[in-house]
Length: 150
Image 1 (cartoon, helix red, strand yellow):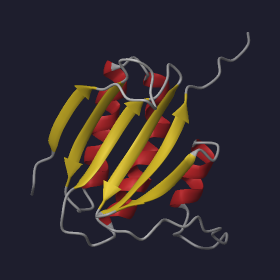
Image 2 (cartoon, one colour; image 1 turned 60 degrees about the vertical axis):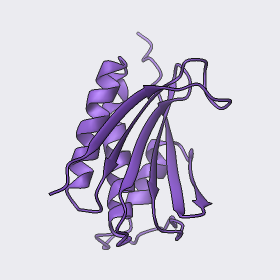
Image 3 (tube, helix red, strand yellow; image 1 turned 135 degrees about the vertical axis):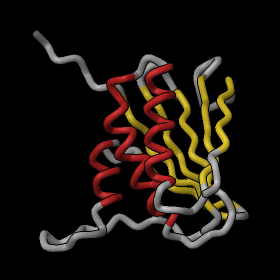
């Protein structure tokens, strides 16, 4: 089995807050890459002090990585997490397929086609995809949960 290459780095670009944190991991197109992505996100969000986002981030990453693994590409996929602001993180998966994801409304008795609907719900519709010369990037933005009034 191929081992994941992990690289965490500080980044600053026009679309993020100054000194925004970014981390990424390269994963093979295998079913077990979803669990590697979950571990990577759990570790990263814990280090960043954003433990409130871990459960949702793991679910989002699992769906995006599983979809990428199904493309049959031979190159590695890249899973990136970037702190866009104090309250928002962006999870993105870059793969070698130019086929864009489609949000399908699954019927109640279907066992598949629910992944992007889950991503859509967890991100309040803040997800998307963009085609690149050698594939695509699918991203999803997660916001910190609002504090419960006491």
